[in-house]
Image (cartoon, rainbow, N blue to C red):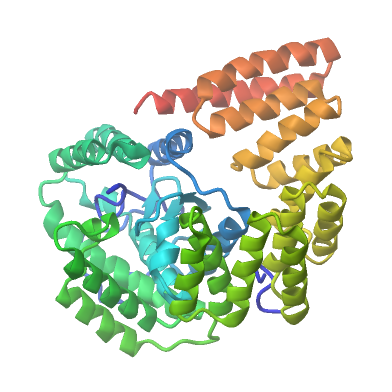
Length: 486
């Protein structure tokens, strides 16, 4: 069943990409086989400082930037990244994804293995191949560690400059726009004198890595060429104000020709694509973008050639939003019967039942899906949230498992804190709240919450909790020190 994963402001990337990490040396063919420009050796691994700063950036991002909270789409994005990573020369890098509630075209990668996209990328990319080509390109930047290779200064100068640049990106991501970008670009200019020359070469190198990764992962590399052509048309139409992705990833005629030539030489084995699945994810994105005028989402999906089941799926989501829960679930159940391999359909139905406060139905629908896909996170989160209203202890046990497997998921810890409080696990609930706070950039509050957790654990004489709280306190202090670099 091929689809059981899901069916189975001018910021970021100012260096073409802001740095990267790689935990093992790339294969020996990384440069020679692809005939990439020689820009200096690719470092075998990022420094721990790069990783530390990148993860600190992610905490600040979660605290300040408008995020798009959609577990179904986020799981889909995770699945695409996971499919591309083995072919992107990243070794055993563990990535994490974030989504920005912003309708402009953009995608980014920062230290610590963070891959992010704007909801607007779904709006611009009309098919899965085009969308994947952008992700593959960003992974190409990561695998080649373009920040580290482009730096012209000693290591002790690199890291403070990187922190300053990431801080500027954060200001821009949070709505600071020109001011944030100016700060980031200023730090960049002070650090890298010949960046304009190198950035063009970096773009070419990331294209080459991305094209090969697409072909190896089963995606048609010609999709990258189509995406570049569409971007170039957009840039020409918008003149001096193209979207931020095109400001940092300019598409020249020579770059387009080079991508076309390379794509034509690549063969695709074991073709993998699902434009229907992508169309349904795109429906969710368009509905988020056009939340005040959902008919615009419907019109765009129809005009741009989405498959008929995806259009019906969008209709069901709109019905649910308008309070027509029965009609929405009826449409989804028909789609589930027609497309039994698409896990996001029953997950959507369970989520709609939850939003309508039909907790027993949400539990039943989630459990039915999880019997087939026990690790499917969107269904797990829906089940846990519904169980909070019926069986807090069951929710607590499930959320313990979820957060153990997804330790960087703030939503999981937020629900765990609530479930622990409702089921009498006081100290663990305070610890879960502390984790949720630190993951969202509020580390000082998280440290104070750890003190509350410690007091509760002492009252409960819970030695296991006390040991864990003390262990996490040391980590939180390290997180705070990293944040101070911003």
